[in-house]
Image (cartoon, rainbow, N blue to C red):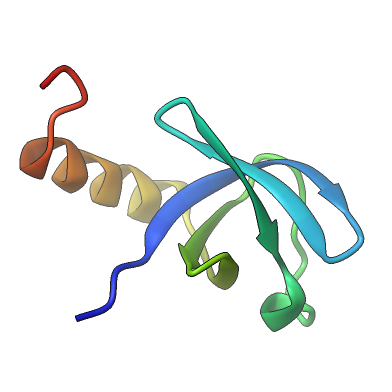
Length: 75
């Protein structure tokens, strides 16, 4: 089974973005989405360090809500 996590882009430098979710920041490779218009504030789905899909804000919030139900951050 594979897992991908939605994250919000906070900075972009070429094909590398800094992304954040639940207070965790990661550097992410954007190469697989080079045909997409991406900017700071956009949400992307991350799998093994690569952004694989641009998400709407609603899609990202829905996923974050499900992750919080599975593994609450205060646990």
